[in-house]
Image (cartoon, rainbow, N blue to C red):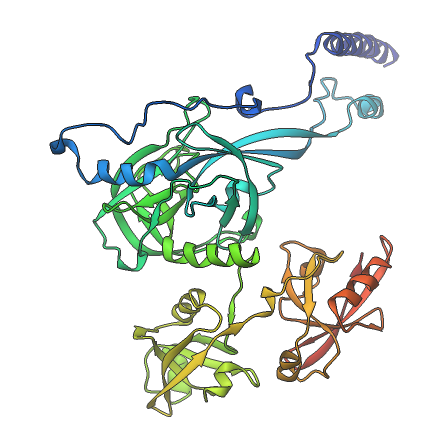
Length: 504
């Protein structure tokens, strides 16, 4: 047994000598900046990625017989399609090396030298976007710029700009970037509600553009394959929600994300977002966010830096045959009102629990999802007509949406939430004494507050038995807490008070 250990130790010493010798040699010979990993060629780090070209690929003198709808659409939209280069730093945990000896006697020695380690990598990725405003606003996917430390925008002409994120919305997977140019080429936004299955769909983007050292976007053509596709990604993938998506067989490949999907009139009808594939390439099943939804999100991101949902004070659920039978309702489908908030626009319009919304602004409402889709596109201050059934009698009402609390974004606290001052009218609506509490305007995904059950719209009344009456006061209380200290929040939600506790 001692002989076996001696032989194994000899092999171990020899192996360690070879390993450390190689590491020493590498340390002497490695180039400057060693340890940095680039997913793309080093050209991504140059001061000027591309040189402006005198040739304009979308404006050529060709016979009229060759100028079909796709060519004309490319001429209109192509100059406004940009390439996006994103630089991120990712924390990577290396795996321990394999122990060739497999003997328990050496586990402690092996683990001492080859324990897992963490290090940072510089990673570059690419995407596409479209300029929607001559002052430099660019619409793209949020997953293209998520966690970006540096964003470079390159126009088809070769002009390059550094960009900032004006706003991003992970749920809808949309973001707005801002560059400093003037009188930039723009693309016209169309109307995705008027799309027809089978009409032309033209996808623009920059798949593998930096690998090809070319800023000019590509054009692929297909048709609208389907409309109204609904998806919800798992929580581990960011809890993104994709509703009423456009499906197309126009080729969409890595790097196309964020680029525009265009109709035959050269109008943007969607934002290319993701594909279904088994080969990691285009298989003719691509999906785009409808431009009407993208426009609504973009307007909020430019104005507020975040999306601002409208507030009407209604809770609804889909009416099922069993519910209709149990409640003695003749309607077969619709959005059943399950709750109406006090002093809300819905309450002032006369809606009550048990009503069934069947139509809004002439659009049929067959489920709670239809109601939510309609509200998504409603702006604060807009009034709209609702047709609803009460005791099997059809009635009409007019609701006026109000600005939700999320539109007043305050400072982010240590728990991963944003709070805002509680307005007097909101305090009255929630049954809270005026001058008490702050409202939670946003809960960051996977944050400490989110994990203990804090929700958007909750009112924080106390922090560790200290009353808070403003966002500034809440911030001061939270700043006094030390890392690892226990924190107890008193929350108000829908007329109920309860405590939640965690550590800072």
